Image 1 (cartoon, rainbow, N blue to C red):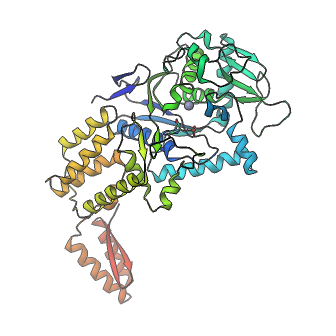
Image 2: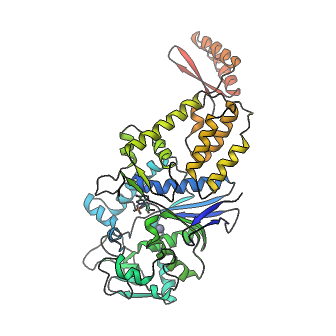
Length: 463
Ligand code: AMP
Ligand code: ZN
C-alpha cells in the first residue's frame, strides 16, 4: 500500500508516510459558525471526507479533528486582512438579537445536519475554539517568552520578521504581502505580514465573548485557535492538515509560523488545499445570491447524496463548477446506480473482485483521484461479473463512496422463509399469537425481518 498526496508545502506529489503508521493525525479547518455553510464550504469538507475514508480503506487508523470557529474570525478576512473588521459571531449576534453562543449553537446544529446528510464521516472530535481559550493563551505566552511578539494598541502581534521561513507555503515573500494583498495595513504593525495573536476588547464595549488574559481582556486571533486545538488534540507535528485554497495565503502560513516558533518543531508534514467551487462559472458568495446551501439543493428535490456524487466528479485540486444542470446529471447517475443495484441478488458467501478493488484503491491512493475511482465503480457495474460478486465489491467500495449502496441492493428471499411468513400470517389472522411469534423468531434466525402491512406481510433483510 502506497498513498501519494500532493503536498502544498513542497509543491510535490509525495509518498505519504505517517509519523505513527498505526495512527494518522489529520486536521481540517472547519466552519465559521455565524451563518449557513454553502455548498462551496461543503466541497472542502467532502474532500476531507474522501481522504479520511481513503486512509481507513487502506487499513490505517485515523485521528481526525475538525474545528468550529466560534470566535475571532473577523470580516476583514474578506478583503485580505483578517486582523481588521468585526468579529463575525459578534456581528451576527447583534443582527439577529441573540447571544454569540446562541448563534454558534444554532449554526453548529445546522452544519451538523448537512454534514450527516452528506454522509460525511464524523471526526474523532469537533473542537470549539471557545473551549480552548487557555491553550490559546498559553501558546501566545510561549511565543511572547521566546521573543516573537509585540504589543500595539489593539492587541498582541506576531513579528514575522523573526521567522525566516514565513511564506514558504504561500510562495509569497513578506515584502510582496506588503505591496498588495492587504488593504490599508495597520500603521502600528512592524511588518504588513504580522498578524494578531490576541486582540483587546474595545474600551467602550463589552463583547459577548471575551476573556481575561495576561495582556488584558480580549479574544484570541483566528489563526491561533487552529494551532492550539490541533496541537492539543493531535500533538506538535501533524501528518495532514487540510482546508480551502484561500487558506494557503494567510491563515495557514500564520498557523505554521506561530506553531513552529512556539514548539521548535515542524507543525505539519503534508498540507492539502481544496480548489474552490464556482457557480455558473464564477465566484460564489452570500452577497452574489448564489451561495447555495444543502437546503436549497433539497428544496429543488435533490437527494443530498446526489450532491456528494456531484463532488466526486472533479479532482480536489481543480476548480469545480456548480450548475443546476450538473446537479441533475449527478442525481440521474445516482438514481441509475440505485436502480441497477436494486435488481442485484446478493449471496452471503460471495467474495469481492480483488482486482478491481485494487484498481479502485490505487486511484484513491494517487493523490485522491476520486473521479477515477467512481469510473471504476461504473466499470464494475457495467461488466459481466456475476451479481453476487458485484454486490460484495460494491459494498466494499461504498466504504469510501458513501452512497449507502447496501440499502438499495435487491435480495432473494428463500422459499422456506416465505412459507414461514405465510403460515405466521394465517396464525395471526386466527389470533394464535404465540405460534405467530415463534415463527417471527424463526424468520429472524434466517436473517429476515417480517413486517405486517395492510392485508399482507413484507420481508426485509435484517441489518
Ligand atoms: P469558513 O466558514 O469561511 O471558515 O470556511 C470553511 C471552509 O470552506 C474553509 O476551509 C474554506 O477555505 C472553505 N471554502 C470557502 N469557500 C469555498 C469554496 N467556494 N469552495 C471550496 N471551499 C471553500
Ligand atoms: Zn484553520
